[in-house]
Structure formats: C-alpha cells, structure tokens
Amino acid sequence: MTTVLAWGAALGIWLGALLFGQTARAFPRRRRRSRTRRLGMVLSMSGPWLALTGAVALGAATGAWLNAAAVAAAATIAVALAGLFLVPR
Image (cartoon, rainbow, N blue to C red):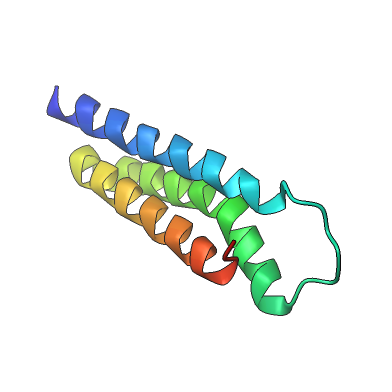
C-alpha cells in the first residue's frame, strides 16, 4: 500500500512538472533564444518524461519500487527547477 501511495505522489509531482514545463513554449517567440534558454526549454518539456521513465526502469531492474518512486519524485523536481532557472519568466 505504501508503494502505491508513493507512486501516486510521484505521478502527481510528475503531472505538475509536465504541465509547468509546457508553459515554457506557451509564449510567442520574439527573437532567437540563447543556447541556455533553448536547453532550459528542452529540459522543462522532456525532463519529467525522462525522470519518470528512468525511475520506472530503475524499479523494474532492482525491484525496489518504493525507492524508485522517491527517485522519480526527486528527479522530476530537480529537472523542473533546472528548467525554471534556465528559462526564467
């Protein structure tokens, strides 16, 4: 039961980060983006997907699903914050 709740929390964090990352491309382009801003935009939009699939792969490989859920939540928060700092609003 604890593992199911942990994965539910990790998926909630992932969904929030995914929706938050979609705002990185919501505004119209006025000029060419710098390399840092482009990297931040890619990280904001695809980072949550990569964090979640990596954590699921880790859980499948090791069988430690509770630890993998914690890794999923932490990695999703980390990539969302990295994207935020690279593409500030």
